[in-house]
Image (cartoon, rainbow, N blue to C red; front, side, top):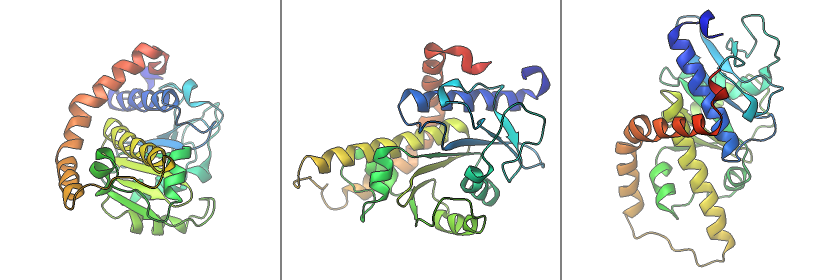
Length: 247
């Protein structure tokens, strides 16, 4: 595949395949379900999506499928896709010019917090950093109704993270690495919240105003740290774990 696509597309394929492998490494995958997608630059509105029948730990840069806004392959491929599962992604990709990568998970911690009446609580620094960039979308059933796309986009607004109520987590980024790191913060915050609340009813809330300060600091620095430091380190980790993702 490397010789059949542009250098720009291949670089995006490698990053997205690395993200799939890292999701598997952190235990965030849900068998073959959920998606991480990335936009291919150009007027065609094409995106990269995982083959439906592969585990995330099997995804490679070459096996990623190029799809249209409906999740249907635009080129011959031996793999199948899940167009219904692309509903959430296509909505955000089409509505947000800055949404070059969209990632959606069904982790137990993410689902649990999405089902909590108060959503993500400011119990940890990680939660405080991401909380100001967090939106919510109420559950409407399995996301196969294309009409739901408009409501997802409206609820997301200009935020880069979302709790899909009773469903899971989502993050948006201007590239794969930035999106992954934002998702990492959201998932980490959800996991810590479940652990804190399960320990009893004496969780300590931060002093008044502290959560807002942390949120402002996070908004200013998270994107920079993701692009310059965290994602390059994560890619090195992916190569150490199994470099076959880049084939």
